[in-house]
Length: 267
Image (cartoon, rainbow, N blue to C red; front, side, top):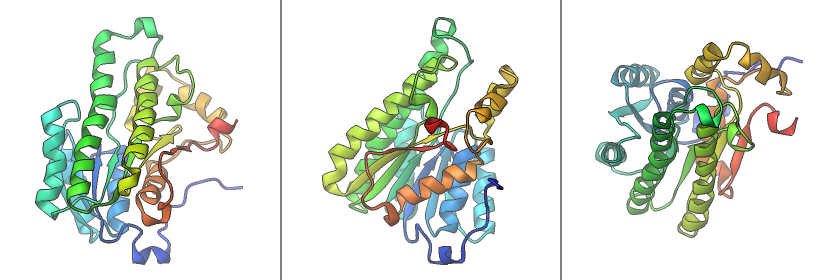
C-alpha cells in the first residue's frame, strides 16, 4: 500500500475550509508554518505570517499572493514579549479582526542528556517554546474577544512531549507545558466560544529534524522504524490537521492534544 502523502486539493475545498477568517501564523517563514500559511490561504483565509527572518516571510507571502491568496507579514520574535504583542496587533491593523491563530514557531537545542544541556539552551527554548506561546495566546485571546468575538487557537506541541524525552529533555519539557497551557486555556475560554487545541507532530521533514539528523546520524531512520506508516511526515500534512482544528468542522473540539505522528504513539 502506498502511504505517501497526497498534495492535491479536493474540489470541495473551493468553498474554503477557512473562508472569511483572519489567521495569525507564527514560524511562518519555513517548515510547518510556511506550509500552513499557504494552505490556510488556499482555504480562503486572510493570513498574517510572523517569523524572525524577513527574507523567508517575504518569499512565502509572495508565493501566496501569486497563487491568488491574501497575505501580509510581520517580523516577530517569540522570545521578545513586545515583539509578540506587536505581531498580533498587526493582524488587527491590516485586517481589522482576528479569528484564529496557529502558534507554530519553535526552537530546538543540541541533543543530549539533561545534565549536558547548557543553561543558555534551556533558557532559549523556554523563552520561545513556552513563554512565547503563553504571550501569544494572551494577546490572541484579547484580539479575538474584541473583534471576532469567537475563534480558535492551535499550538504546535510535539510527540516528544507525551513521554520521557532523553535526547531533547528541555524541548520535551517545554512542549509538555504547552499541552498544559492549551488545556487550561480551553477550559478558561470555552465559555466565550474560543476553542484551544494543540498538535503533537511526529517525525516531520523540517529544518529542525534535519539538524537533529546532522548531529545524530541515523536518528530519522530510527524514528521512522518505530512509526507504523514507516515514513516521516511532510510539513503540509501537519498543516492539514491545523486547518481542520481551526475550522468550523472542528466546532466541538477543544482542549485536545492531537497526535499527528503516523501511529508512533500507538506502536
